[in-house]
Image 1 (spheres, rainbow, N blue to C red):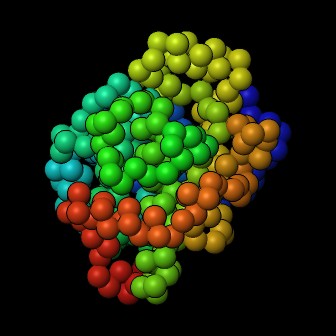
Image 2: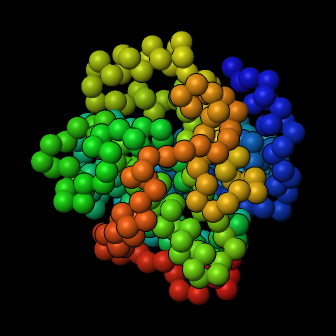
Length: 304
């Protein structure tokens, strides 16, 4: 249940979004759906960018406001390119929300470890391809668990073929989200663009993301946590909405203000030293360009 402080911010401080367009990846459930619901309720036209359009349509029908559904499979770069090729209008807000968490070892359609490929590379490619249309903000959803695993990006084995561990792979993908945001903002600033890149994490929010954990013991632990400790997905969406609509510096990172950043009202939060490393951010960007075949667009500062 949301606290009084959360409810006050959500009800009073979400600015009017009338006339704005937002793309939310993974908007068919969890915090993506709640973010889409809030933005549409505030007047935005919200595009549900989802892997399963049928599920997306069902979710969109529950939302009071202007919506549309478009297919996007972040684990398939051809799908990412198809989505971007079909985009032809200004885009105020891109929310990179979709993701997979602690799943058994799998590969994307392009042969990347699926958590890194979906959570980071898919969104990296999508952002670069849509950036010429973005007019305001790119928000990427990370996690407090970016501090876990080895704590750094394993550039020698991004696919973690040598010793795959679901939790380590997830942590690496969430660390990549923050490094991506850091370097994206640097490039936007350098280009003279007014577009801002921000990041957020939901704290411990009850969603269906945890149900796919590879380890049965972990799934059991997460089920118990969801029942007794987690905040609901509406509260979990508040940091995303805050990062998307408030006047924050570029590269800001938003999370809950409660104990251990697990729950509470949205506020600016810290990140690991590895997530603040500009050299690692630049290196990850270069590698990601090579892997996805996408680049930071030329002349973006004249459009955003």
